[in-house]
Image (cartoon, rainbow, N blue to C red; front, side, top):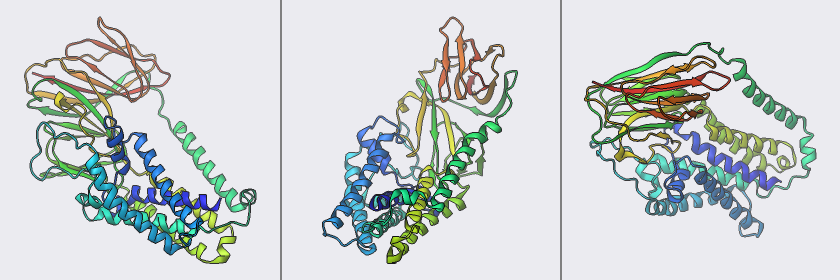
Length: 456
């Protein structure tokens, strides 16, 4: 039990530190996303396969060390664990990363190349020590591997003198279990207690509106991406050839324009993006940095306890390991990450383009939009609350419209067409000039984003 718990704690420390280290200015490292580009290049970088392969790789790394100590090739100690972590760092940075850089397909260049200096480094493409992301990349990775190795070395020779049943009977362990269960229960019940009352009529509010002089040449489509950033993370600077809208689902998405002010987009707010800019998560850096320091401190505590022979026989070491696993898990989940949508109209030449962030997801790419009247155009984003039981509302317009369901379920009835239902995180395209009636078919109100592009 002791060696397994130590290996799990080492893996949790590695993953937790990598996830929250941008709070200290380290760049985002995305090995899982790189593996996705290699094995499932058509999937978004957040696909589960790459992250599963990353976990398997870390587990195999831990097993190699444990097997070496079990056969007497290495003496289980903090020093040998640190040395092993440093070797893993060298192999990963000097061998694995360049190899992935050769094997992973390079994303196709955009149809309109960005101006010089507005092409951010790709965190999902391998290079020697990931130095294309800056010197912080190998330093951040080295800290992760040293934490991993130190915890492995500190626990590889641990043979607890008590059973799992005895450990479970510990008042400290029981109090921890009760606290975790209480937190989960509060997390499940609290949203229900604070749920907004169900409206009786459909209502809408304009979130953002912007003029568009022109649209991309040729056929166009609507694109909706879901992106999130850990506190301290930066994407950019870069530029989009046409206007887009950032809509925040959780946290604050900070948009820093190269030649203009910085805007903060809070939950259910939107920001218009019309020029060169960078995306940042500038909020909650302090608690994220505190969590990163806690992971390091708990790893040091594990080493300190195991260094003292009396500490191995006590109940403090498993509690410290469990705490490290919990802290690493919180770091992986990263509750302070923001979550925002990027909604835009694009040329069909951009279909399937590479995602800009390891945590990105392609929510919707619409069919081609029918020809719109000549410009200039107006782009308007509305948030519509569709009440259950209310009369169907006409959502048609003179322009092209995309509906994205934030939560709930709606029924869309085009004039002369087939009825479709769209659930949460689903979307549908309304072609210009088509009359479409929308109604709520769920028990609760449906919240819908409506982006319309009208010409003339």
